[in-house]
Length: 90
Image (cartoon, rainbow, N blue to C red; front, side, top):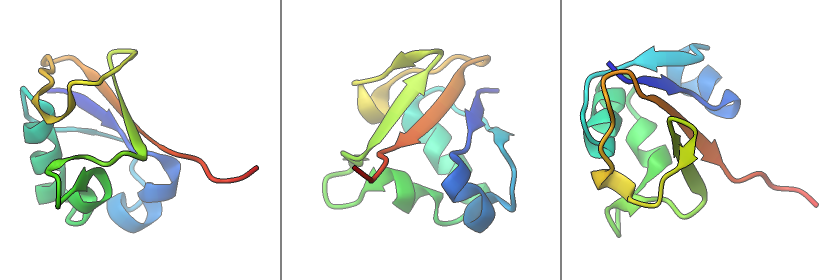
């Protein structure tokens, strides 16, 4: 199963501190749906509901490569997925 690394700012509220989670899925949409089943609220952090796509302020890295394919991106059974929220500051 793909392994998803949870960003530090999301851990306390969404995953009770878990850093990584294994979930079933062969596309990003399936992985995000599986995450949301385990941890409600995860989908709304990642997907823009009005456009049904990954939010513009979230980058997704799959196996070390930043994906631009969005929800249809295929993932392997041993893939590592990182969600990278934009950082504020200046």
